[in-house]
Length: 206
Image 1 (tube, rainbow, N blue to C red):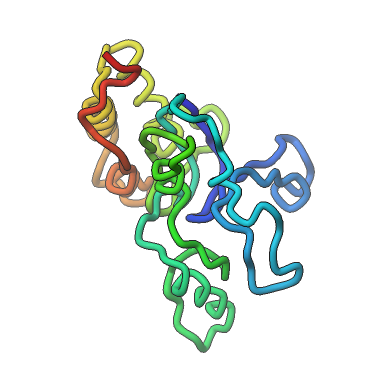
Image 2 (image 1 turned 90 degrees about the vertical axis):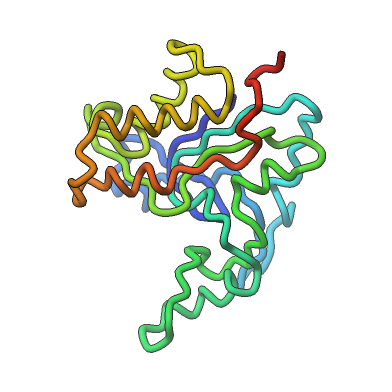
């Protein structure tokens, strides 16, 4: 496995240092990106496709990524680029959540399709991943709860088939929280938490 919990978009996973005044404004840490091309100066950083530089060969983990939109698989480069124009209130927003970066594929899928490494499968959110502050981070539901439940299904419940661990995490979430509480985002959490990969995979191999 590898597990990252933070902030994201279809293009990038990021996080921020805790306890810094101003929070993300002054303490952001840019993590893994799909593409660095952008419609403002400097127009590119190198490597252009950072996620494609992963070269872990056949040592392929299951990637579990906590954050917003990292598994939003309905992106492509042109609509992603056109999303930059949503800054103008008189133009329509295509809701790519890419801010002008011409993202060809979401981060979760880019990890899976990397021929030189990446991940054998990935799990992430297709939309806004909800988190809870403080102690509720691991007990109040949302993205933090369901990702932990996935690992509990694998480690404590012996669900070693990937699709079973994923589906049982969702089932346990549904049975643990009020799905009619729209403000808490519980229904949205289970609807958008997707597995990209082979659900019949035996985690760790036979």
